[in-house]
Image (cartoon, rainbow, N blue to C red; front, side):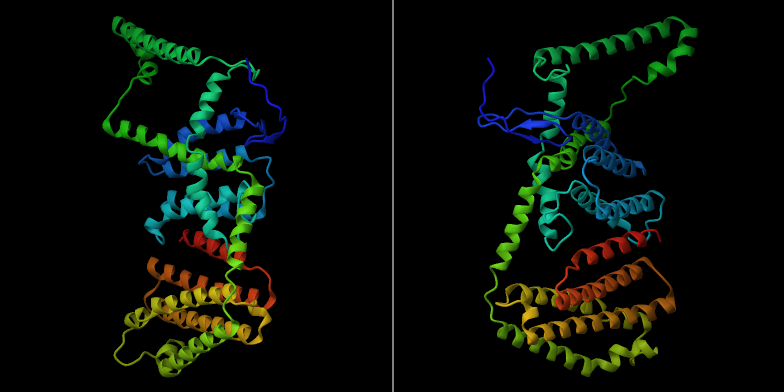
Length: 430
């Protein structure tokens, strides 16, 4: 006898099926699109672990296909197209052998762009779009969602096998499913055996069907077995991300993002007078640094090297240290704007000092970039020099975007992210 439930409410699962919300036990349901996506991910995981050059490209294509299949009825934002474009550019550059700039980092970038595109395409970002909660979105995309739904593919496949009939009330018994699978495997094995015997019995039959029956012969090796075993957890993780994201309620994700922002807002206890003093000390240090090292730092602008320096030594000396100072300035700016007892824009002294801090950071970026330009003009481009140029340009753009947000109160973090992602992808074409 079926258990009766008194709550007839429903919610929409990934793929469009209506899933009952029950007080005692919620039966598992899977949409047709989830079933198709589960089969796609099996092949995608196999390609992901392949050693052939196009394997990663095929995996990305199948990953995108599964995502589009599951979320074709979700409104496609313009931002999701940007992340998809970056993913496609990097994937094609790597497949076509254009990966000279980023080298071993291509795999990392493909994972980052792929996961972030999926969250954006499914509408599962914490704030509905790229925001300062980037770390929370990364935690959700790489850890929480895929591992929470790690066994979703097994449940989906089992549901498909046990509900072969159109009527959802008529469920196929597990014993029948197991018997059907074993019977088909046995029949295929008998067919291959019969064909092999017939090919041995007649030379003409062998010439006619040898190619057909050889496709069914198993050539197992240690590598193939290991790849098959590893593809199972890899596929479970990928399907847990792709389909599991659709089973996460958007309002709960938004509420989680709002709670994190509220927790950060509760950090506002430091008097702005304290931050005014701290910022003054930092800016005084930077002014002294520019005064003492001005001739050394700005030598690249008029192509004059300090005594005892070569172009290569001058370009490398202090470059990453200046980038590190800019990163520290971003951290200081975050502390000032998030922990001050009043917003920075409401205190003129703090706002002016934060703007001056960003201006000093932009000057550091210009100095570092001038060194690189001098180096490149003398010795040409190399992957390392292009990477360094990209880094300093992203930092400069970040300073400009932060200054814009500080002075106007408008959001600019998403523009900074898109700028960094697009330029990174375009640089991979080199």
